[in-house]
Image (cartoon, rainbow, N blue to C red; front, side, top):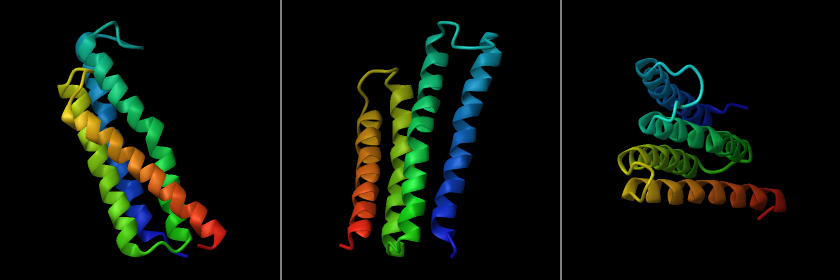
Length: 131
């Protein structure tokens, strides 16, 4: 069995992980902080953006992979994968620009992330139940 579609989104997720990780590393070098955030607000935000991404990515990617294995239609796999990536970009931009407070991107990024996780989880439960 091939997992070409989920493989695409897992790979794009990995690349975005590198982008977010690089932001943290760059700020640590600039601020000469080897571990933690050194109480630097910009580094704290970059660290939380990266951490929040890492907290959600394994579930989203596992659910997408299992959905493909369960036979989810291609269009839905692409829809969930695309919404996932857009959601995480919105969240990263929103958390950064909003400096930890309310921001349109952060709000919609979280909401769309939950939509993807919930939608894929419910779909996989439906596959299990034969619905």
